[in-house]
Length: 297
Image (cartoon, rainbow, N blue to C red; front, side, top):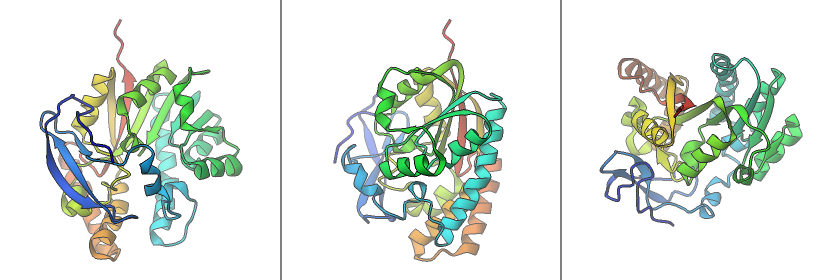
């Protein structure tokens, strides 16, 4: 385990314990989420280092690295994912009609394949070798290992996306600098993350599936996303709710809390979360942030 000495957003070294919880999905190990006393950023501390973390993904049940549709939760995930591809395409089309797109953490490539079929030039980056191979063999996609981002870019992209990936990244500022290097000057970045300030996070507390310890190293809010990207010379131009996530996350959270999916209760809590998010500063279960580089000229 590695201990984090300073906050990645503000550099402060004074933290308090925010919550203790478990890896309900796989290892059942206990982890601690701390809160930065200066800026309020939430993150796991101590945490598995970049080598150790790989064992917490080694499960055939880890959905984003599998195409399995067995079981209710997997079926719900795939139904929502298909619909989300269309919604994500509409978001991109508001800013870019066509061009090139880089998806960091592309998993098994369904999102990129959707854009490829719409005529876009696509490339993916994925650290998991099994997911890489699925993307290549099923969709003939250009998917590379994460190390490519350390290289000088051979081409730059109009759009760079990270769909529920940023919370997994060990070194945030380095990753954002890589994004900057691969983005054209007038390009857009689209980041989707769970929102720790949502109502379903409040309802389920330490059982909230959005924490997904320790795979999710950071637990973002609108404020922390704003602070992190402003520090790295980006500005948020739009914030968009992912309303389906409240239902899916509530089903998982019910399972972690009670051992049962409790579909009706989870559905009602999902509705409650979305209703609350509508009235409270767009604080839905997950949020999409559209960002642009700050022009310093």
